[in-house]
Length: 199
Image (cartoon, rainbow, N blue to C red; front, side, top):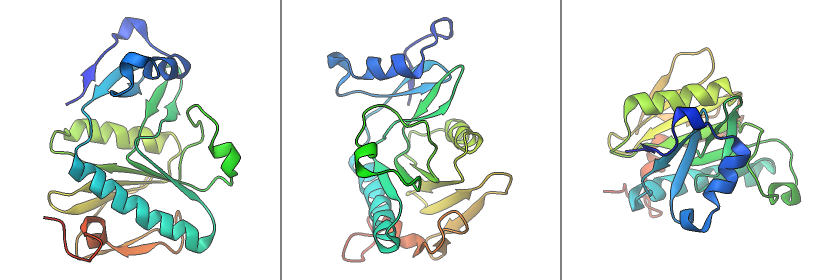
């Protein structure tokens, strides 16, 4: 469950938020900025990291094969709103902005939206909070959002001005016009390296 750290009267900018999260006392804590308000998030647990890594690995292989694009994970911050500022940390992101490795290595939050943002749901996630994030991503220019629910397991695919698409573990996920050529079984998001489903 998330906790609000800063009240509405004291809205924080993305620059101030960057300094805030890098204070020594905040090193092992997890935060996002929602319209100027600092939200503290619980540390991700092992299952959350496992599914996020699976998805990131599949996207990394896709990027290597097409020799284009790159993947970010570990709740990397991206600015998706201004005045007041919003900084979110999707579990996985796919960028296709042509940046060099040197440009990617620069510190600070990206102002460029990813092509894809992935949210891996935890048992404590509330539907309203997830819906808010998805809406913020799409309004910021993210072309594709995957909401991954390991408990079912299933994926909901969101695109701007389109109805959500629900896919079960027996379905095939296609990247569409946003990630041309990407294709995998939904079940692969939830499998161990040997192909066995995670229990």
